[in-house]
Length: 138
Image (cartoon, rainbow, N blue to C red; front, side, top):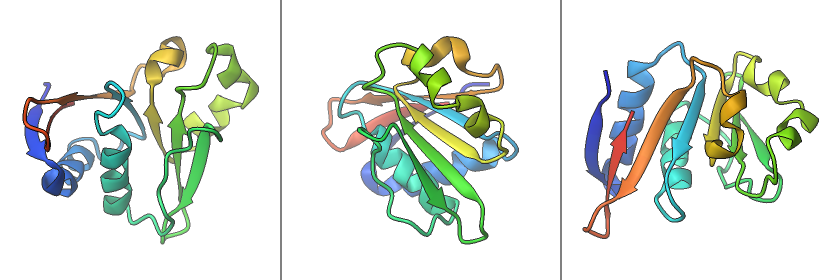
């Protein structure tokens, strides 16, 4: 069942917690939304909930960042905006990330839709008319 939350930036931590509680065993999350919708900001909130010890930044040029968890695990954060084709994901060995058992958080997943596992949790972020509010659907 889909759930939508209208929230402010200050409420992102709560929404991130709710998302992770709703899908406790899922590891691949795809974030859809236009430029400036808040994908990276929401991913930062999710990483806080997962107890990432590293600084979380968009991997725009690196394509993927690995963040270490305080318990020794990893979170992989992808920014696929600069990919020219889904074949580039084959070149970086996406399977090693997707099937590692670690969380994979993907921005611009439209670029590789055909490679996403069926179990991928899709999260849509939309701007509202109010400047500080987003509608997050998962």
